[in-house]
Each structure stands twice: as structure tokens, then as C-alpha cells.
Amino acid sequence: MDEESLRDTLARLPAGVVLLSTRSASGFRGLTVTSFTAVSLAPPLVLVCLDRLAATRDAVLEHGAFNASLLARGQQFFADRFSGQAPSADPEWRDVPHRLGENGLPVVEGAIAWLECRVHSSQEAGDHDVVVGAVTAVGRGGGEPLVHWERGYWSLSKG
Image (cartoon, rainbow, N blue to C red; front, side):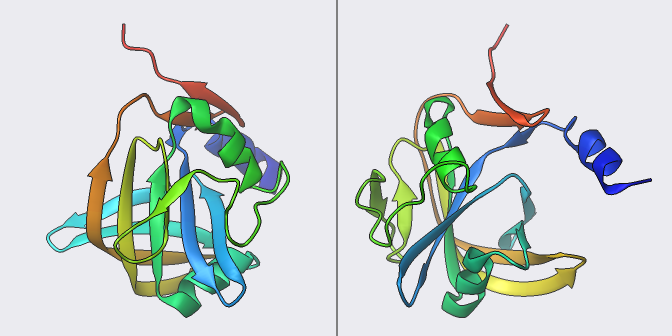
């Protein structure tokens, strides 16, 4: 099995698109992720897989907290922007519609839901770190989710 075959296979699994935000010494950082899931309801824990070469991964571990904005169908530009496929945001996120959560980190306006987390633990796993976050606050918005499947963005339609 080669790496490309594994990528092609895993691309067949639909995933929600999440914009992870945190803070570094130079300002806010963000990263688009699709490896995000619930771990436990009691205590409330989620996990995210972060590339060990990503600057946002370093910022999450140094700051000890992150927010997860679950992107809506019309927010593909933000998914592209924070995955490096469009111009990056400035450190103050002046051109990214957001508000600050209770923890002082960005929550993307128009997201279908969001979670505020503090880092609970981190474990190296190959070229990524599995970061478990203890959920400290949540919120829900409206709309349909942005879905990543077959290396592209999709939306759900109820039929």
C-alpha cells in the first residue's frame, strides 16, 4: 500500500469541516481540519488530529486552548483560506467575520455550531498529534454543514 492509495481510500469517508482557532504570540491562528470527533460526553471531550509541522498545532499546544467552528455550507472560502489554498488571514482576523468566545479565542460567525476547549492531553501518532480537548462551552447556529468528500466540498440535502 502506498500513501496515495491510503489518501484515495480515506477520501471516501465524508467529514465535517472545522475551523480550529487559537492564539500565538503573533496573534490568532487558524487551521481547517476534518479529523475532529467526540470522545466522551462525561466528561465532555473531543479530539482533533493536527499535523506536527503545522504552526497552528504548535500554537494550540503552547496556548493550551482552542475553539472549533463547524463550518456552514456557504463558508468554503474560509475552509480554503485556513488550509493554505487561499490567501491567509492577518493575525487579527480583521477580514474573517468572528466574535471572541468566553475563552478569548475566535468563533467564526455563521458557523453551524462551535465548541470552546482547553487542551486535555496530546499524543504523538505518526506525522500528526492527537489532541484531546476538554469542552468548556458550546453553541449552535443555523444552516447546513459544509462536508468534505472525495477531496471536494459538498453540502447535505435531506430527501
